View 1 (tube, rainbow, N blue to C red):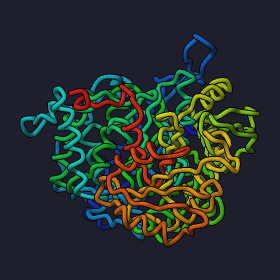
View 2 (cartoon, rainbow, N blue to C red):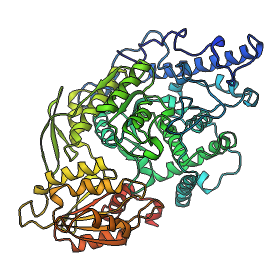
View 3 (tube, rainbow, N blue to C red):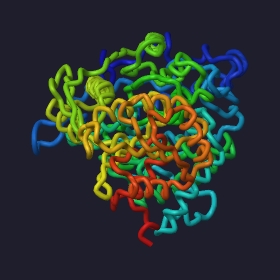
Length: 612
């Protein structure tokens, strides 16, 4: 089944947008039965939905979908534009989802009502007139979308001038972290409305899952870039600089643009705060990302879900393709105590009109299937691609349409991730968003890289392997990869090979015992030296406590020594200088980021204050 410009919307008489006789009692549009207030409010809602659908359809009719004819021939549309402009993808207000309510419940057990609306009496009367003057979104690219009416004189962060502007912008974003993680879509949707809905200007794939999201983005993004398609990505978390979270064609946003974007979005966030509460750091960042993608005319966006899916800020965007890589136990305090509960949160990103892809198995797969059936979304289930072999620099797999294919990513677990990525690219083509030829896929997969995930560096004449591995599933993948890679690392894997030195850190709210248990199961760690440390984060587990966990869970026969070094940089330097063989840095992406900042000299990741 295809979606896109050639697929009509479901009949409104069924699951479509609620008409005047189907408005739920108690909603902001509810009024006296058959009264003029109710009718006028319903007409306003219908007009607004119609304008949004018209803008989205006009945009997609004007944009090339990215079929590459051959070397040097550029990108052409995958199919001729339709003669008329039917509605594109039904937005959530037209899908029969619960109507906006004044105070949406949030959390793992909350029902499906997921956005906040003001009572009709409090709505700004000029909103409809403002939207009536909007041009088609296709005509707005790549110009700026912000109306630009700050409520107060701009600070250094809002002006975004010079090094001080960039540093102030980062500080302004990170200061929002004091609001913590508050799941819910109301604030994000309100913020996007204030910015004239930049997320309607592009399509792509929304990717959720416990592990593998970043690898799927890295593989699919590399293939799209190889085809010459302008691709926006949202890798998270950042390792060295905040700017890594906004990337177009593999390059992070420059400091001046980042500062400008923050300065433009902050006034809108202030207005939203007065009505809905302060947007969180991630909600603000999500709006900034969408604004930049629209401004730069991104053709395909690959967006990684932050936490869960159903109430994550990224779910305010519907790109047309929804992917769930896999589901395992993680963030149980917010998503639920079981795999089934967590799968429900992640599967909720599948909406009516989407094409869905999943690599989930077992109980999680059953949940994803139920969600896809409930919303009528075609579901493509994939298993791991057959593994052909591996070496120091990557692996080879067998893919259905490409045959034997080289990946630039290490670890046999990437065989499952490339299967999901390949299916996502298939879905993008079927949805009329972007179609890639086989050569672009092969070149893209071979060139893919994913910093901090089984990344191999040469530091001081030693091999240093970086991997986040912050949950048991990730640690198990690292343990297997260490056994596979050990023969290719310095010293080999013979009986006289020098032992590994492993620098570890962890967040206190993670399953630390599960991570340790998965790692010590690797034969490659026999006789290893463990250096436990802590990163400069409020949630970090103290180094001495982490070292005590390692001593308790491991025996002298497997681990030679366990020591605690509270300062992460000092721990890394000590490990490098005193290691007899390869060094592994694992357990926390914050620690991996500190290691990359210490050992990797990448001018593109230097922030302005780094050169001051």
